[in-house]
Amino acid sequence: IAKAQGRGEGAAKGIAAALAGLPAQIDAVAQGFGARAEALGKELAKVELVLLAGAGPHFAPAAFGAAKLKELAPIHAYAFPLEEYHHYRTQKQGDVLFLIAPDAASRQRALETAIVSKGVNGHAIALVPDGEAAFDPYVAHTWHLPAVRDDLAPLLYSVPLHVFAYHVTKARDALGLGAPRLGV
Image (tube, rainbow, N blue to C red; front, side, top):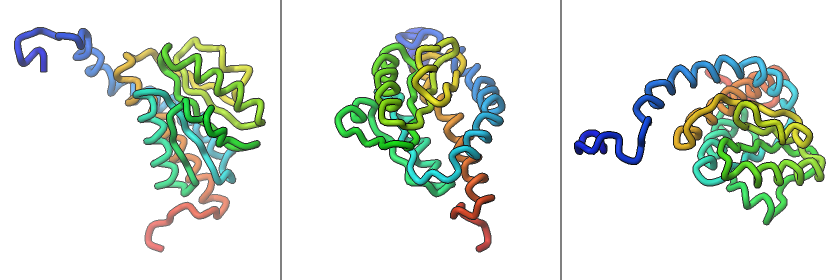
């Protein structure tokens, strides 16, 4: 918009180049998480509840992931803002929790959430940038994603959740656990 108005890139410096590279990043993440998502789908095929949490704009991948799980699996899946975890303590022993924390602003609270999750014997999966190791002692799985602009992270961080929803659906179907069937 700024470019069309003759203001160059305006406040979105570098966004055009980042957007141009996004399809390749999305493809790489989809391909790179296939085996991990398949393994986790088999591991969690019998769960009936999945929680997903993210802060600010990173609530969007949580909501998308919950929608895909409900649509495909079907599993009871709920997305909520990261801070709400600490107000309601929704997670119980064995419950699955995906933490989406791509940015520095939400990472500390997500780490605190992972610590509480471990304390209730939850099963947490953290989606964080490459190189982030602070979550490792507190979560069952750490999924590292490539560097991406904060304003584009919700798009990229939705991809492994979609891939997981697909694979957990296949695993549930193999067990006869209510995955939707075509033509039935």
